[in-house]
Image (cartoon, rainbow, N blue to C red):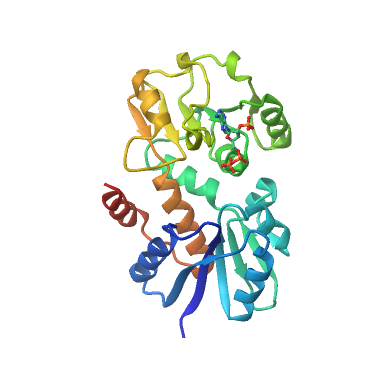
Length: 271
Ligand code: ATR
C-alpha cells in the first residue's frame, strides 16, 4: 500500500502541491499518494486526527492553518519554533507529531539558485507570517545585514527584537529606507488587495535583485513596479513554492528531489 500524504487548507482546490509531490515521487521512485484535504475553518484538528487514524504519514499545511498546526505538534524544528508556524507535519510511528517550517528554506534555496547571499544587504518588506518564516533561514545563509520594514512599524520592531541573537537584524520605518540593498524581498500580501507595499522607490537600483513571494503568469505587481524603477533582475515566488515542497519531501522520504525539472514544468503550465 502507498504511504498517504495531504495538503490541508481552506480553500485548497487550486493547490499545486499534489502535482509537485506526485512529480517528486515519480522522479525518486517513491510509492506514495498525495491529495488535497479541505478542512472546515473550525475543524483543522479533527481533520488531522481523522487523517492520522486513516494511516496518513504526513501533511503540508497552508492558509489559514499554519499557526494551528504549530500548536498541535509534540516536536518542533528550530525554523518552526521561531516562525510560530508549521507547514510540514510528520506523523511518527510512536504517535508524536513533528512540525517543520520549510517556507523560509525554500525561499533561500530559490534565492541561492540565482545569487550568493554571503555578505549581502537584504531588505525584507512585511512582518506577517511569511516574513517570520523567512528570517532565520536568511540570517543563517550568511547575509551581512537584514533590514525589516513594514507598514505597521511596531511589528517589524518586534521581529527584529525576537531574532536579534541569530544575526545582524534591524527594523527601519518604510519612510526612512535608503538605497543600497543588494536584495529586496516582498513578503507582504499587499498585491492581493491590488496595492503596492508603500516603500520609497529610491530603494530600487539596476543592481538590486527583487524577489516577490507571490507568483503568477504575468510579472507580479511588485516586480513590475520594481522594473519600472530600474530593477533588472526580478524573481517571483514559484521557485519558493517548489523549494519548500522539496524540503518537505526530503523530511518525509529521506531523498532529495530535483527542483528544476518540476519548476520549469510548472512555469510552462502557468503560461
Ligand atoms: P502572511 O502570512 O502572508 O505574511 P499576514 O500575517 O496577514 O500574512 O501579513 C501580511 C503582511 O502584508 C503584513 O506585513 C502586512 O502589513 P501590516 O503588518 O501593516 O498589516 C502586509 N500588508 C498587507 N497589505 C498591505 C498593504 N496594502 N500595504 C503594505 N503592507 C501590506
